[in-house]
Image 1 (cartoon, one colour):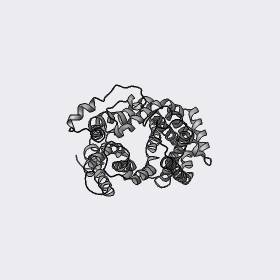
Image 2 (cartoon, one colour):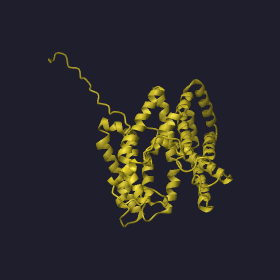
Image 3 (tube, one colour):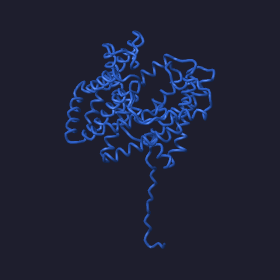
Length: 387
């Protein structure tokens, strides 16, 4: 979550389009953030969601699991997201990219007019329509993946499914076996990117769904964790080499990887395989660091784990609101970036601590479980005392 926060703080200053942009931009910052964070961060979100789903389905039936997903994902999306956080982002989007010059309240009808009925299009997000998804596309995708993959998840929990998981974990336990997962990831992009054009298409949904199911299986058999630990450092090497190869294609040879801009070709196939290896290697390396050094628990982690969804909901809108003022100042990119990060982070945590964490009704709208009341311990009265 901290990596996502930092990445979005840098988005004002890279040369790609975003909701708000600084006048001066940095190609170095763009390449650095794409190299360090882009390859693994959302993939890890979906993989860890799959891990959590294994335990969730272990303690509840399918119907209860779906209702839990509704409370966790759709209620925040269609309440706090739809009515509070996303309109602000859409205003900045219109201001920057559509030449909108009216005030915030005047644009609200324009925002609500984009609300359409559910439909099947090139983007799976239209199945859960919202006027402007912003960074909350993650909630749309995670709910759809949770729902559409449920038959497979239930099968993998069955006796026959467990034999399949055990076979896969046995293969992964051998040297190099962890890279078997590159095959479905590569096929997903090679097959679906050629059909579905643009970002956030069904190709992306399938890509993230594979990470989700991998995480689900990893929780089922400890041999996957052993394999992750064993292959961590070689995956770091492959991550670096893969990024170098992808950068060579894009920056030196001029290949445009934007979905739909390049026709199906041998170079297209090579790029998708190279990116699949790079992304999977980055995810495995980050997981291996967690296995080695973060296999513990403490009060800070407990607090952070509970805060992560509200933090995610808040973070991009708060970053944009702070950046709206900072990017107008006459100072260097690095100073602006530091100010945005240093101001935004405590603002998000203050909002969470004062207005979300303490109140069960607000927690509900942020996808959190009710806050447990402290248990009252009855102290036995000493014998012979009166009431």
